[in-house]
Image 1 (tube, helix red, strand yellow):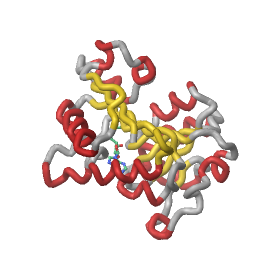
Image 2 (cartoon, protein in one colour):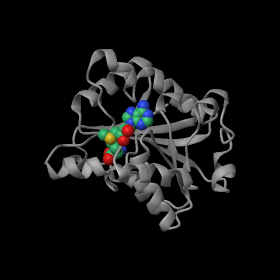
Image 3 (tube, helix red, strand yellow):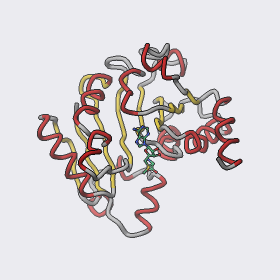
Image 4 (spheres, protein in one colour):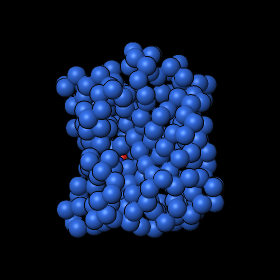
Length: 220
Ligand SMILES: C[S@@+](CC[C@H](N)C(=O)[O-])C[C@H]1O[C@@H](n2cnc3c(N)ncnc32)[C@H](O)[C@@H]1O
């Protein structure tokens, strides 16, 4: 492994805003489960998750925009999380944390009704049918989100991948979930100011290439 990556791994282990649950704690139940607001953020503010946060730019931008909410970026890659967590520590952003884990076990880290809102930003599309269970909007994962979200909690999805967007629409329809917003071109449409206000790393890259960004918002 490259020296820089090794250093990032070592750094992340010392960062107070990065939680890296062991396999055992994921299985047995993490002490923060059901206690994120008080136990980690020392407040009772709403909890917002970004799933597949990468380097965490979106989590950071949202946290700076909405200081009255707590933001947790979730990703399995330490070297990516390093960027956002370092920035948050250096800039004393107390309403930001990063959780390094596989999202497919997310229900083990959050209790029923603990989360107010979820953003899924530019997920890996996993186009091959045998990999469908890895899609972050697969019904099995939506079932997990439903449990940890508060009643009426919403999920936002932004992607450049039209097939993933359409797949998710079909899943929502099959599950009878309430669609609150949908567009195949967020920036051309201009109707969804909240979703267009902040861009992720990948989103900026795709926008620079002239690709349309699709957006969905649904209630669980
Ligand atoms: C294409 S990147 C998008 C990063 C960021 N959201 C953005 O838009 O710039 C997808 C991210 O999702 C993460 N990811 C994909 N599947 C995951 C899983 N099952 N658990 C945790 N992270 C996952 C990857 O590690 C990667 O950082």
